Each structure stands twice: as structure tokens, then as C-alpha cells.
Amino acid sequence: MDMEKVMERLEQMVARQKADMEECRRKEKEEMEECRRKEKEEMEECRRKEKEEMEANRRKDREYFLVKLEFSQEKTNIMLATLYADRKTDKDDMLKEMKAIQENRKSDKEDLKAKLDANQEKAAADKEELKAAMQYMRTELDDKIQHRIENILAIVETDSSGRK
Image: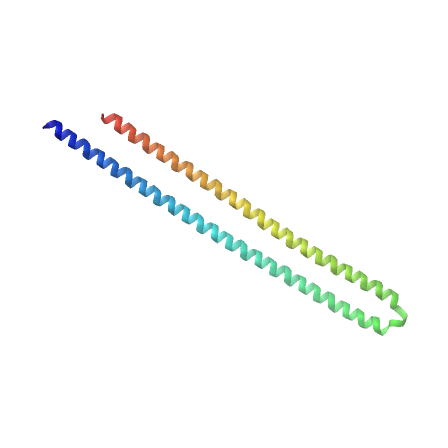
């Protein structure tokens, strides 16, 4: 009779231990899922911000380029008017100036393109750096979870061997 009670108590203890372990696993799984969800949201927010910043930079670069272009066109138009007014006297000098302006415009355009390319490369590098940081955080989290699981298993084994 006593043996049956002891066995019954042992079975109850094992059942409680299993239930506790399942609850712990469930909680850890929920925490892990919550962490992953938060990481995903943070990554999406970061991507969205990067995209907005890139778009803003592109708009600024485009606006800057258009203003420069408009200014250069106005300057060219003024020079053309002067050229036509003084056509007979300053023809050669004016042609040289026009060529210089065109070269400057070409140079400005190339500079703007180079800046845009540099911004895009920086954005890509920042994105890669962010990916690496997120991967490191995931690895660290996985290591912590593995360590917790090993600790729980060690406790369970200790409890199991101590009760036998």
C-alpha cells in the first residue's frame, strides 16, 4: 500500500515536472517569437527610414541639380543674347566662354552623379552593417536560449537523479 502511494506521488511529481517544463518551453518559445517579431519590426522600420532618407537625398540632389541647371541655362541665355548683340566684334571670345560653361555644367553634373553614387554606396554599406549587427544579435540570443535550455535540462537531470 505504501509502495503504491510512493509510486503515485512519484508519478504526480513527474507529471508536475513535465507540466512545468512544458510551461517553461512554451514561455521561452513565446519570448523568442516576440523577440523575433520585434527584431523584424525594427528591421522593417529601419529599412523604411533608410528608404525615406535615400528618397529625400535623391530629391535634394535632383532639386540642387535642377537649380544649378536652370542657373546655368539662364547664364547661357544671357551670354547668347550678348553674343548675338556683339556678334561681329567678340565672336571668338564668346565661343570660348560658352565651351567653358558647358564644361563646367558637365563637370557639375558629373559631381552630382558622383555624390549620388557615394550616397547610394553609403546606404548599401550601412544596410550591410545593420544586417551584420542583427545577425550577431540573433546568434547571441540563440546562444542564450541554448544555455538556458542546457541549464534546465541539467536541473531536470539533477532533480531526476536526486529523487531516485
